[in-house]
Image (tube, rainbow, N blue to C red):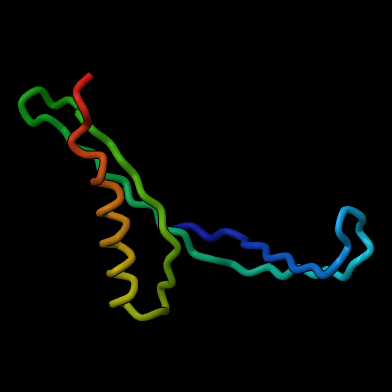
Length: 85
């Protein structure tokens, strides 16, 4: 789990010139990274690695966090097994 700053900018008017009104807000978001390594137990060699990142809120609904984790896992495993070269 890591924390990052997220910036959101808003503007009105201006076109190609900067004569409109603008503002920006920042917030801190939690980003979780899940890393999955698969090894061949016979040779003890790494055969595949993957990772997925997702914004999570530890103080939020744990059911929602679990759904986000499941989505991240599905995305991570979409490329497994690797295609033969």
